[in-house]
Image 1 (cartoon, one colour):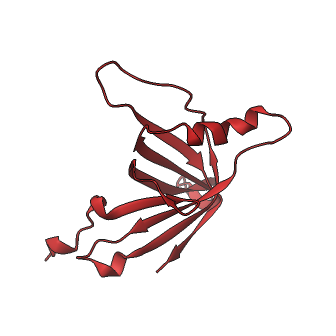
Image 2 (image 1 turned 135 degrees about the vertical axis):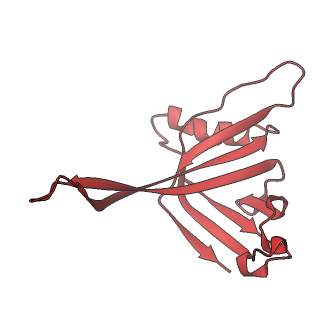
Length: 140
């Protein structure tokens, strides 16, 4: 039977960038999509599948507090600088499930868009930063 106390509570998640806890972050999602190639097989109409490339992407959801990431991501607009590449550290520390406690080091992070400006009158400004990355490491 499910022990409800062991379910992960997102309130205990934190995201760090360059040693700084990003207190405005409300969520992070990391995915590795396995791309399969279709393989035709003799004697059957059923297509087989062969694992091929892997594409890693993620999203950070947050309240808008600063333009720090906008400024960093914008360096790609300068032909002499190139893309902003960084690392993130995601932390999970739910006291009721110490088995899941740990850090995820997200490597080779590059953001997909430059979130220049977005707001709606009467609402708290939130943003989503979508990114790709080259790998991750789970550290306990």
